[in-house]
Length: 593
Image (tube, rainbow, N blue to C red):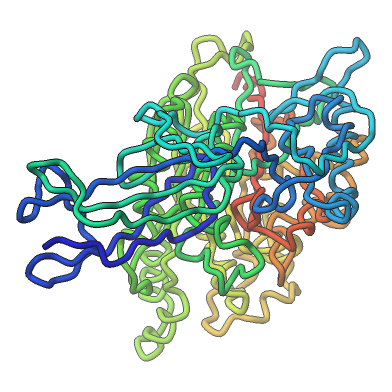
């Protein structure tokens, strides 16, 4: 007879919007054991498995701590309530929790106050809203304050029904499939999963059901708002007007799931490190920025096909992908990562795509310059499977210039992820130089603005950064001392003619003091774009052609202190170890020739 041996959940902390998929181990009548489902449509010897999900709703209402979401709240900040800050952010589990979090929590109050403009109107953040603020704490030891439901997740397909009442608890049936995605209605409540063998003829259960109780459902922590800050005299607030000649570009290393391990990021709670949670949090963040062009790095192949491409398609984006090559990589082709570029179909059309495989460039280089006896050694050093994706797009919006009437407005966008190994400074520089030489050829063939985005795994002041930012590398640069293959000599060849400027260097030129504090005055780059327990620094950039584009606004940078409350990235709030960069550009009117 069919029987259930064991059921369990990979994580006992259910999160709104993140699918719960129980592990069910069954024994078949022939004594074999498997985890394959036995649905009513395909019974085994007259039996099938029936699943039910229940929400156990206590008469006592529960609020969840905003800092420790697995804990029940006993305090509520009245300042948040009066400022109309999202109510979920106002709860704390203990006075010590509130005291420890105050340094970061008060930023919400400051944001709320600054979001009221001179006319008393709210200034809309790119990611959420805040009003004016006061202070105060509401002691909620009886936990009688309910959390206002926020739409976050899908509505249960099976209508809720009261199935049992036991003392002060009511069990609502919320699902009849093996998996279940918690909704906002489930916040603060325990879920119960039930699996039972059923006779396919009589439809009656055989034996006792196997059940699991979860901990209380927690809301999905969402990233704090990041404002779009004007670097011109124009005021930038709220959504961008897509009818103008401006467009926005986002660059973001989203942290490939195969790299997001507890060994690497042990400080991040396991539930926040899981892909079902991270993918929803990343999607909310990316979609919330409303970027016209999105360049993502470390996108796992199967996640591109099964998640990013179809989900962003729903938001009007067309997707292009370049998977890393596999000469060094020895895992599954499905889990290898790559670079993904998306663009809004109502803003741009696809003209051409170029794929850069640095492995092929390495083969050509060694064939031309390296003696046969040293080729194997050279290839072992140069072949690292890194790639770049270059896309030429045509704008569908007007540049609003008299001289540009009737002219096509093209934009070339390069998206890359340069080799990560710290000791291979020559390889990093060679990869960047190779990419720039390819872009030079495209620029020579057309009058086209260039955008070079990605994770360059190179800090400001390094040779790759110097090559990008000033078009050459000082022959005395210390990075050039690492050149065992002689591929960087003579140093005078390490040049390019593209007029590239780092978008975020614009913060150094304006009077926005808060952002200036987050920029290195020596390099004019952000203090960091990557923040882990063991490293903090800038590795990600958006470079642009300064002769044909101007920066209108930039997504504000994050403060290190605000991230350190969770030790580092990734965290429940931010689901990558990198931060997203976003710039708004305007095409300069082209002069007549």
